Image (cartoon, rainbow, N blue to C red; front, side):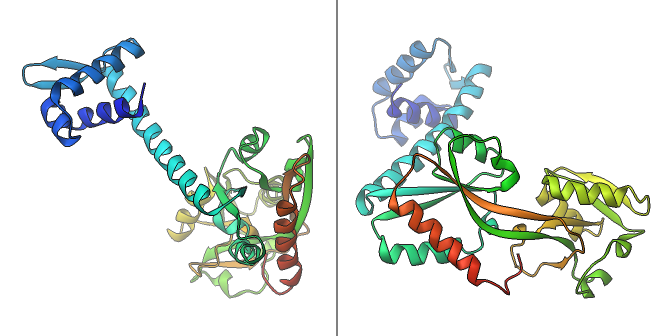
Length: 295
């Protein structure tokens, strides 16, 4: 299956008309029809039903075109990235992280690094889930993680970044937003949202609070859903400080508890490129110097 055949198939799925699709792609209709037939012969099923009025997608064809469309977009991005890379860079370092704000100083580290190593591209890869799997498959060079997540990963180098504490997230008009420090008893009678893939340390705090029997709770599937619920006044939540985007939309108040999150970068032990060590060193230095920055 060629990229040209993929484009022809996607275009026909949009127009459902052989003549119009061929015109849109600037080829003759016989050439267009022939390429569609070759594609169907290769995959072993009909993507389109032909009729005097044009074409329609078969049930299998509809599913197939959905997959093709996503694959074509991925291929387009890969080609564009390859073109950019070949034109300006000799090497690339990719970093997987679940959300942009997890590594607050990443943009600053990239700026500093580019001054000494302009030929090396730093590529952030945002993976809310699946980051560890991508790292294990060598699809990324560095992984932002919690130290607890690294214990079962073989062949790695762990770089300490920072300790992040637990914060209460509340609407800015919530009375709790006026406090400098929130304590357990401040949450009694309130509704606490829990779940959503919470790290082990956070689950410990949540279970301890729920165990008092002095507050209500309900499960939220993920962090973004939780923030929507907070904005809607349905409750409050606890979260690691590294998820704070510092947008000012919500109040993030330190919560009084001993639990923290050890945030690290994980690299492949066999990856001894000087650029990797230099980039990680820049990030570590930025975090060491950010004494007053809330984490």
